[in-house]
Length: 300
Image (tube, rainbow, N blue to C red; front, side, top):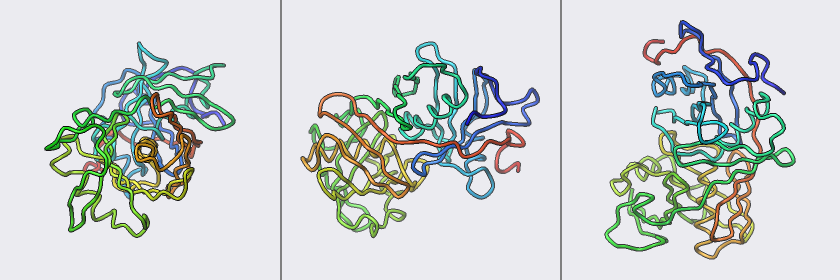
């Protein structure tokens, strides 16, 4: 269903006095986002992200997505976390972005969309009601993830990180943003809320870390939970699902195509072991609204 308020042109959805912010809420396997057409508008987006993403005093979301103009792709995209920090790329956010652009009629008859992110241009195709995201090639070099290690090894598989009295074997993957994957049994019994923030902010990770715990159910299915950098535990994480699938292949646990089941739903990840990773899943518009003012939480 097209978004009713907006014409089919890109432009800031903030009025001249900067008192009203039009937004759309979307979700992909429970990973929810607020999207604003920012155009070329300059604004204090980190402050607005913290205010709007707040679960009790704001709209509530796992991130704020800005739709921007781009000179190298169809559109530009920025994604800010609820703490105001910025993510380099977001797989579920890309699916939501594509859903929004299609619903708004901004791409005409095009079946593929090029989106400029901090991590580079990512391409999204619509196929049978789902979206296929080209997430690019995974990066396995420690310095590119980045992770500071006492040894020079690529890839880094099952590195023993000791936190909270537990030894966590981490496999490191970058999907344009840093991930550490821990294969365990009993994913839903794991104290993620306790250990997630400790792992995220460990001194080994100069840009912090997205932390995943995963159980391999078969060669075609993985069950997982994710602690996202700057957001906490989320119902789903697209780049995290990709990192999990890559890490599982590096260990020889799964085939080239695998379903990753997260609390918010299931996504499919494809990787041939050499090229780009493909993330496949749906995305949905939830509602549209207007934020009463571009103000901080404290000001509200």
